[in-house]
Amino acid sequence: MLKHLRIRNFKGWKDTGDIVMAPITLFFGTNSSGKSSIGQFLMMLKQTAESSDRRAVFFPGDENSAVQLGSFQQMVFSRDVSNKIFFQYKWDCTNKIEFSDPISQSSYSGKFMVFESEVSLSSKNQTNLIVEQIKYELLNDSDQHILSISMDRKNDKYKVKSDTYKLTRKLGRAWPLGSPLRFYGFPDEVVAYHQNADFVKDLNFRQEILFRSIFYLGPLRTKTARLYSWNGIEPDSVGYAGQNTVAALLSAQDRKIGIKKGNNNKASPSQLFEAVIARSLQNMGLINDFKVDRLHEQRDEYEVKVQVGHSNTWVDLPDVGFGISQVLPVLVECYYAPAGSIIIMEQPEIHLHPSAQSALADVLIDVVQSRENGKDRKIQLIIETHSEHFLRRLQRRIAEGVIPLEHVSAYSASVTDSSSQLTPLDIDAYGNIRNWPPNFFGNEMEDITRQADAAMERRKTERSMARGDA
Image 1 (cartoon, rainbow, N blue to C red):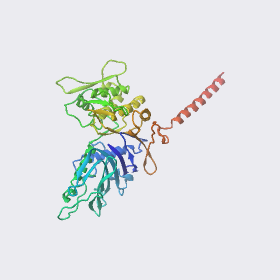
Image 2: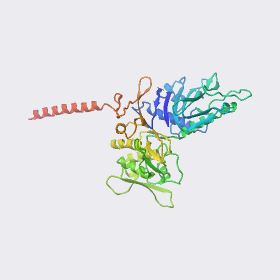
Image 3: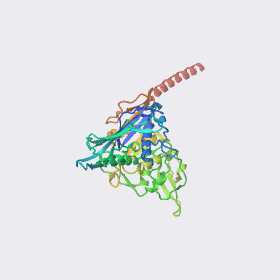
Image 4: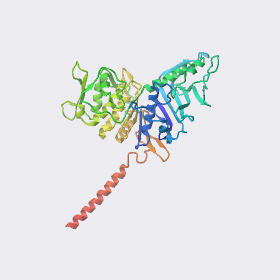
């Protein structure tokens, strides 16, 4: 789970500042305020970590990627190639990192990792990207500093250093170090040239584990179909546009999910995966029932059926409201993702009625409090949304104690003359937001006042005209 994030000189952001992240992290803001860029940056890092090219510092994406960010010039702040993209994040490694120095026999153990990197464009050819520095810091459960190790570039050469760990060179000629692998990796020479640097391979690997745990669902999901094919292969996710939603549903049909409410350690009785999705749709007031049927045991074709309104008739998914087809991938991804996943979603509430948007907040609270096989799933949701109804329901649930205050983090993005700005919303234990930005969701009171004034003037005019006609 990500704990902190900071980005400098990326797209509209000169500096995001320190973003404190929680199980539910929300980003609000006007169009083109930069809120989408934060998720896009994380997805670019994921694409890079999963790229087959270990030498590519960034993989900005192609036609098959979740994001396509173009060249360094297109993604760097103000399109000024003299700027360097800096980023830092802290995450919970779940499983502790433990190793010993084979020379000193000192032991090191930590659960949290802080990583930072800085990337620039080569001044020689204006094409190649250069990793200026990478730095890892290992922290224990109490956030105490255990170890740091970095790799810095100076005069076109790299040097590895640590303030808490004495690296011992092997005998022989001191060949220069290669450049970092991707944006985060110590090159093989670091291990080859030192007697006690094997642990950096684990640091590299922990990055890859982190980015494998990140999933993305875009704002526009694919249209529903009357028939779906499934050959038994389990997809990694529902896909960036939800195209694998039904395959994921069928793959997870034997899984059971329970929900732990608030601070209560007791979870609700576990239900089969399909029943959990049906219950979520029911709680949002979208359907009465839901099922996935195989057309024939000799065919790999399935149809999704729902009951809506007061009817007992089963209808195909394309025959019901568009909002159901758009929110179904959201629900399936949230429960399908493996334990410990980080799910980035843009506008999960799109095409939903206001009451369903409110209810969606309750469903996503269930997601972060869900359990499977007797263990918390520890899902983190990073959500870009425009929904006031969604936020209002979260505020209410914080006040009611349904979700702890520390499990929600919210930010408002805005644009100034120079760059995007991010303001953390100050939410108290009673769900109040103590620093509402001006016109956060438009000026509702002004609309109400202007409506009342206009109505009063219109009544005066109508009465005057009525008297004149008499």
